[in-house]
Image (cartoon, rainbow, N blue to C red; front, side, top):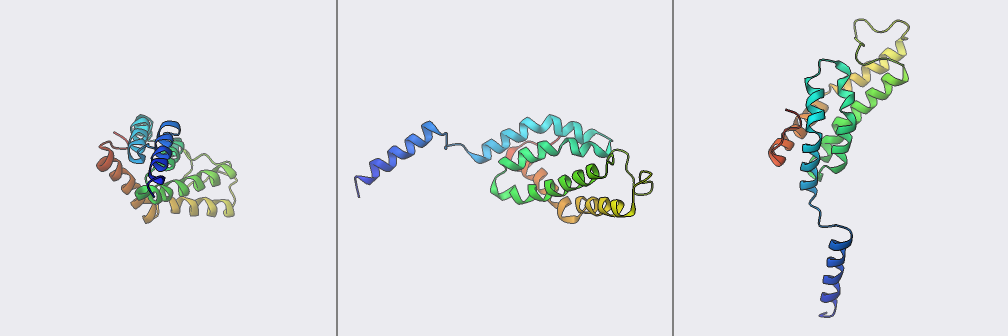
Length: 148
């Protein structure tokens, strides 16, 4: 068994040197949170209802590097938002101007129903709780809020 130990050590050293596999997922995530904070702060400060879609790429990038303990919450935030964005685009509806009470002229009942279902998913308790979790996680673990 002793000959195996030096070989295993050599593999580990090679991995560290060549691939950078020593990367700390938590540190990488916190660095990403810090990098996206300005953009997310601008979106959070916006009064435009469609501004959240400007944050979607940032959210997806954070979700990709999120540690396991917060990955499901990121998915619960990103997926409904992406679905709503796709539904709005499919029906050529501007999220910034759409309202339930006054939908765009020419929007048929089926499209309106699809948009409203996607919007309900974004506002669902699971999505709201997940957003709270990712915000709190960034603050607690990274010491950085997602937005200022």
